[in-house]
Image (cartoon, rainbow, N blue to C red; front, top):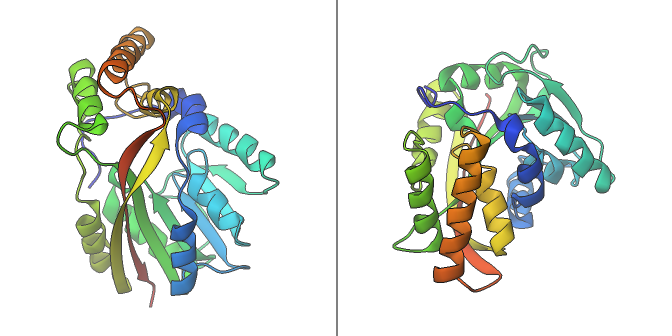
Amino acid sequence: MGNGKFTADFGKTADDYARHRAGYPDWLFERLMRRGLARPGMRALDLATGTGYLARGLAQRGLGVTGIDIAPDMMTAAKALDAAQGLSIDYIVGQAEATGLPAENFDLVTAACCWHWFDRPKASAEALRLLKPGGWLLICAQNWFPLGDNVVARTEAIVQQHNPKWPFGGLDGMTPVAVRDLRAAGFQSIESFSVDFEIPYTHEGWRGRMRASAGVSGSLAPEQVKAFDEELAGMMAREFPQQPLPVTHCLYAAFGRKG
């Protein structure tokens, strides 16, 4: 099922999300194209598209892309980022579990860094309905990786201090969950993979990335966000003065084909 009682308003994070969240690496899209999940001329639907980071990567490679999200402010930010790159993506307000879109209308449905927010069986069934026969559902995420006392682990500890209800600290096990969900929904040819790599952040960039998270601006009052940001800035100046700072991430993906 979904994430339980914890909720967040990502509309409040749109500015920081658009400015500071790292996009998906080119090698992810190249890998998807080699596997046959994406190619020019395909129609793709990006669930919970946010500011469109995955959607833009697909549009850059010649796919016709629609993004759907419950947060209009996020998609407004997405349109500005699209325009800066000369891209055209359609955006609609709606839910992943009940999009209201026609059946068998897409070659690819994607869910990036959002699957844990959904009622997963309903979202799986809706994706299956939307896909053409032979189409693919891709579930993926690009998560920071807490390890020992690295900057991620130290940052997560500060988030927990300011927001004890935040449930998403630590690298989660979404790939096995996604594989089970794909199998339960009846998808075929299921595969998964994960890759660890580093994304460089300035101190300002990492602070902005963290403000954009569900556990900070998405669920805290403005004065709490300010207190968090000040504590994070102080910790980084003392313990991680290097700039840019390499931040370890894990990108994982699972995908399956509609029979």
